[in-house]
Length: 283
Image 1 (spheres, rainbow, N blue to C red):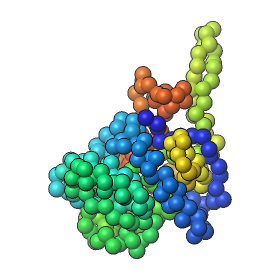
Image 2 (cartoon, rainbow, N blue to C red):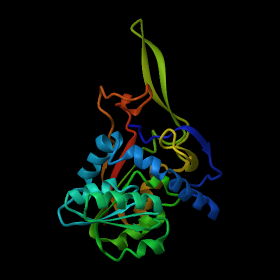
Image 3 (cartoon, rainbow, N blue to C red):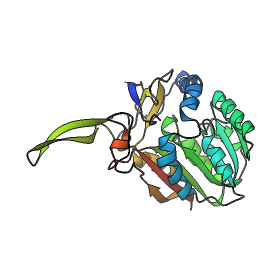
Image 4 (spheres, rainbow, N blue to C red):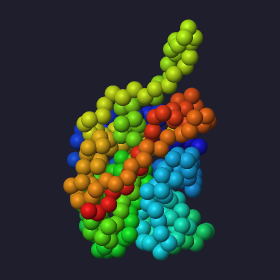
């Protein structure tokens, strides 16, 4: 299964501060996902290798769900992780701004009934987030979505209103240090002890400043999507400013010997984590 790391086409968007200032730019973000939803759903299904091996297990560990808890799934996509949480005993409210993703998610849930409610909510708009209610959720989750959102401050600022006291927020993203759109996976020949070997590495060109780009998350998708790179200081800082504290962090990577579809698949980089999973709590 294709790793959800951008490949192929990639171009700098005309944005340098982590969000596009033009209204039509915001709508382009959504239009790309509406166009790509069926393709992503077909390729991702109930979870590809990244989700099954790296993201899902780490998220479940940090989330520590208890039966009967109510969870908000932000930017749920086709609802795969929302359904997983429901299987673990949670009542889930799953939201996304992409109508086609929600249609696909509802179709899957109808075939396998679960305690998931799907809502059309744009997580970059505080007014829409506040329609979800006050102090309603034991936890919130966002799986591999924050780097696709043109603004994350609205979500973080609303979490203290949405979560119950001591509520937690678990999110996963492409690792900002190693898997942003200015990083390159490289395969090099090097000499060691008079023998030539092949070595893999990550070349990082940009990190400290936020930037926006467009590219493919999965090879062959119909439309390039937007990526909003934020260094860790900005990513976590949005939570700190909202009154959240970081209390757990994982950087999962593939084990030695994992088999990838291509020479530069992330499965061949066991020492470099392609994703970051974090837990933040209300103070």
